[in-house]
Amino acid sequence: METLSLEQYGVVYNMFSFTIASMLGAFAFFILARERVAPKYRISLIVSAIVVGIAAYHYFRIMGSWEHATEYANGGYTFNSDLFNDAYRYVDWLLTVPLLLAELVLVMGLTREKSEGLLTKLIIAAIAMIVLGYPGEGAAEASSIILWGVLSSIPFAYILYILWGEVGQVINEQTGRVSLLLSNARLLILATWGFYPITYALPLLGADVGLVGMQIGYAIADVLAKAGFGVLIYIIARNKSENDGYSMGAA
Image (tube, rainbow, N blue to C red; front, side, top):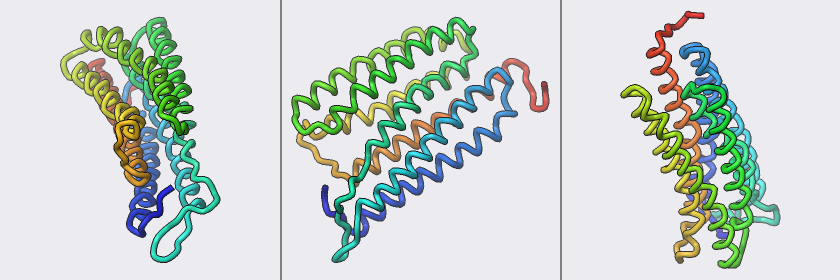
């Protein structure tokens, strides 16, 4: 691992702190905002709260690992014998990525049969994507990185196929504003999740974003993909509740 200047160490540390605060703030918001949407959409906000709660915990662990793995010397930070455990991210993604897809499906208010069918396919694909991507993350040889990268891209492509196929059909059946918001939610998934395979592939292209750039990028993508996505889910749930005639205080 590289030696870090005081500024580099600080910006990563502060980014971890910002991410934890963002996740905890979002958690409080989702819990408090449940009563502002119709009962059938509240489950999506509960899932949103679970997602950011899991993320806050894992970023707390990542931040602790960052502190323990580095030590200050000669005006900068060097890594000691303790391992900086970035694998917490994969544990987090293994839990939160399927739940993020569940948020999107649950807020649509579909029939139980249709929701279960979509959730089963999306969750299995999400788990496969994370599990297959992990070996390549720690691989040193280009052949291994490419192999696991290609394998993990297959379920990712399948998820996009479902989101723009079956889910797309449901989105087209929604009213104007809700349809637009759901389409934006899909695009946010594509934009934020797309950051990870790009970062994964950069070393193969000869680019080196460095440990600092990678940690900052991951943190920003996670805030947008979890807290930001959850806020968008709330807006969708609020709009659908209003379309259903729900008002605050109604049973």
